[in-house]
Image 1 (cartoon, rainbow, N blue to C red):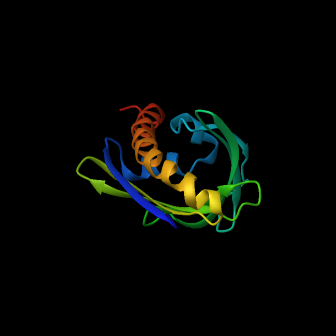
Image 2 (cartoon, rainbow, N blue to C red):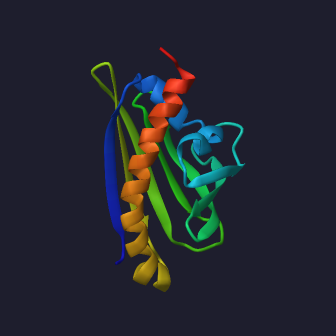
Length: 154
């Protein structure tokens, strides 16, 4: 497998602006993404080129992941970045978060494009991560809704 792509969408009972504020708050990533154990390094300000490092954990494995902001469009509520292990492996994933109005709430769509570059990432890891990501992202969006509601109680 040379690459793998995926996308998950879900309705959240909160305004698009509230959802986007939580999605783009790097310090709060561990609040709603169970794979992220903690933020190792965060930028003082999010702007194109900003980087942050988080420690990720899946059963049997823990590693640091470095992300680099590509686009932060607060008008269109679009957040894109590229992430990769913080060990000089050239493999990466490109992530896109889009938040749109949906009735009294929002639709959150998360898309990813995994680009394994090394032999083992192509031969083995990409097959495993492709299956894991659909479940992990769907669970994260459920937790995201809880985090947004806690931040903005009705």
